[in-house]
Amino acid sequence: MNDMMQTFSNASPMFWATLIPLVLFIWFLPVILAAFFNRPHLKYIAIAAVPAGLSFIAWGALIVWACSGKVSGRFNQWFEKQQGRP
Image (cartoon, rainbow, N blue to C red; front, side, top):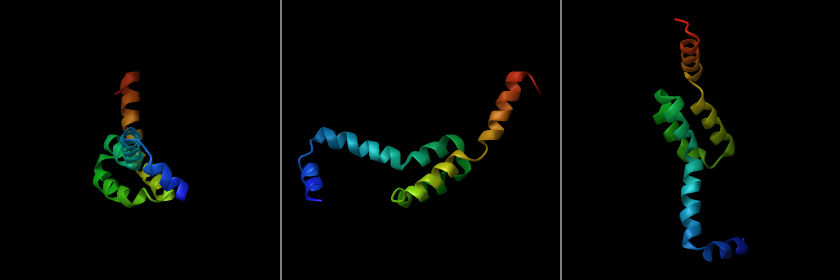
């Protein structure tokens, strides 16, 4: 534990400028995905993402929730349009 504290105390500002945005991006990745795929539940996913970042299982469940929704319906509509079907 002391080694980790010593490493963090000796870290450069560039290290922190890289690490903090990277951690926040990964932590809120379900919210970003929900903005693209599952807009009706975006606010619920955003609220749940705050504590879920502390649990890999809860974070993984949020990823699944964010990616599910009407994606298949949108893909089917796009695919049918590409095939020339009404």
